[in-house]
Length: 382
Image: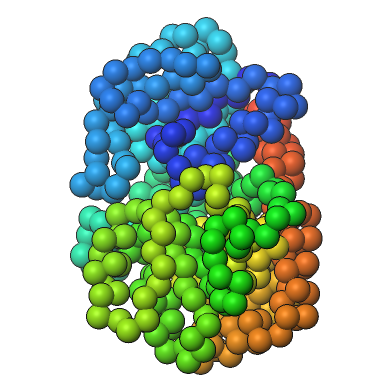
């Protein structure tokens, strides 16, 4: 098959969408498919490099950090893509590149599959002060948007249920968890590599630092833990980092803010920790949960439907409801080496079986073939 993937974000931007696209592209090309990418340039200049079309764009950081927009009627490289004649388009973002994807799909009379990565009702604080208003706007827009697609991929049952709640036809929705590269387990102790004290009990938040991640709750909980050997490490960057550091100034116990780290060190931090923690309920799937488990790291995360089928209490981690629940489960893991080792083994084996790129790619391949076979050409109006 010839597959065009469209995304507003692409390498060198680092986020869940980009990781998903890179992993899918790698798998599909490994299976002999021809894959090209249509994305936005980080400048006004359009250019092409190694099968990737970068369309000139402007920053839209006032709407959302890292967001960019372009002239949706710009047809730079469209003719070249149309001469290439892709069999299907897989869109990854709902904005500029989606409109381009729909125009190309319409002109070539080919199906358009879209992955709904983001639950936008959790992000409306960037634009609208009233959450209830934001949810209604998102529901209406999502339903209209889904009508332009032939199939919608939901990365989790949580996302699928939300989309159905918006009134989107359940027959259009397919649940396919995003796959990740399975990391190697290092022979050398990661704490020795990173300079982390062996006597510490390390709890780790690793990921994007943004308001919707609710990291303040983890910092607040950390203040209440009596065991002084427990240390909180916060790894990552993002628009909320400075606010979070200011928030922490009046706290007695200081987390270790490490900011962005070299990508080669990410798995080492997972493997140096004892427990991965998160208070976010804005995830559609939570790739960092997959990554933690794949590194053999038990997770302790706020109860959320996105974790159904990912975290099983007492098997590869826990979900918590309040501070008392958080503390009880955290200490249960940290104070029993044999039990923690049991959770680590289960975390790794479950991730290998369920969150690999191979499993992800195979399911996307199957969906593409079904979409092509069942495609009915229809006119559209954006």
